Image (cartoon, rainbow, N blue to C red):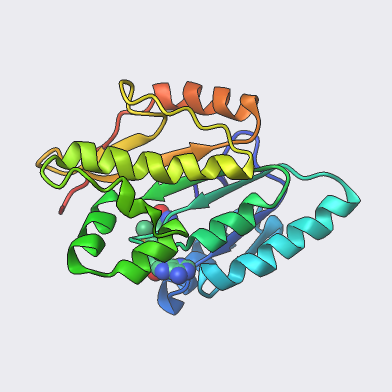
Length: 209
Ligand SMILES: C[S@@+](CC[C@H](N)C(=O)[O-])C[C@H]1O[C@@H](n2cnc3c(N)ncnc32)[C@H](O)[C@@H]1O
């Protein structure tokens, strides 16, 4: 909804929601947008739908170059690294990823190791998960490991532990971090825009956590 109401909106939008009831709510919401002709909505698992979306972008890229932004907003660890890799294969694809630090720590705690491996696309995350008694340091190490792995796709990632990196953290009422918004661009202008935008964000407390 925010993207549809932007001052300079994109020329095309792709939305995806796996839950049929929520997909129907999404259909209704976007149907009243003046930009509804620019919108295509999918219903499915993003880890499969991504093939279709990337295929469409690649077709478009052959005709004229496209500039893309993927906003990935999972609840937990359902977003697989293979999906990130596929999105990253598009030449100009900026990423905003809602990284569920709370979900990640819970999944590790419950022993859902296969899910965590698919989320990171590797089992090497174990090597940075070395702060069992220091939750902030543990979250920082896991987020930075994820962000650093984006570098191999050509994204610029500055890891500055003193500044907390370039993600925006969302805390719960006990001041523990539950989500962290990660941005990645292959172009320095993208980084510049994100930094400017991030300056104006007051991270909200998430109710109910
Ligand atoms: C955090 S919510 C997104 C909320 C939405 N961005 C908004 O602001 O209203 C995550 C959504 O992802 C959907 N979801 C969960 N697993 C999914 C998957 N594998 N593929 C696509 N959507 C999924 C859930 O049904 C849920 O609606």
